[in-house]
Amino acid sequence: MDLNCPGLHNPTDPSIKTSDFYKTCGLPKRMEYPSWFYGYGIQKHPPDNPLYLTSSSVYGRYPPTIHTVVTSYFPTCQDFSNSRGLSSGNYRNYSLNTGLDRSPV
Image 1 (cartoon, rainbow, N blue to C red):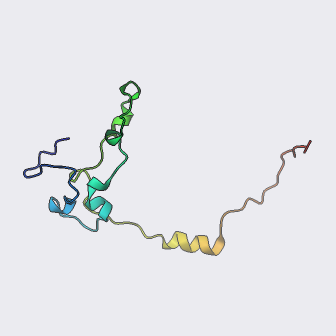
Image 2 (image 1 turned 90 degrees about the vertical axis):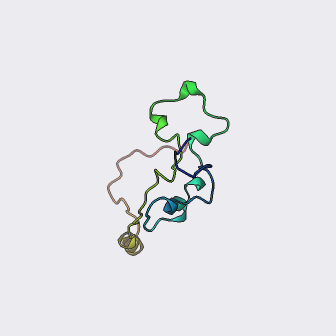
Image 3 (image 1 turned 60 degrees about the vertical axis):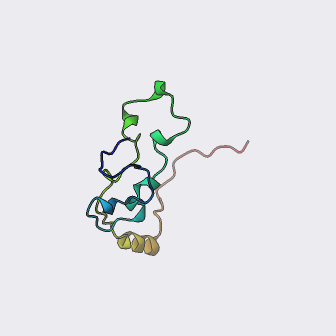
């Protein structure tokens, strides 16, 4: 895969960061170093049989690069969900059971 970057000879070099090429804001390390991503179709050994490739499998075939990874990351706070789960617990169904019981025999 050719990235066409001047001075970039090895796109899988683990020392290359996204912030070296783009202005970033709050990226976690896994997005700062896209060479850490693993498990995409192009990285499988042995590769998938081309007979079974579909057009939708092309979407996730290539891992993210420094040019395709996001440049800003703003995660949402889970305080509301965490407080509701601790105080009220999981939902319990109190409706009438009308199903037949199976015989133990």
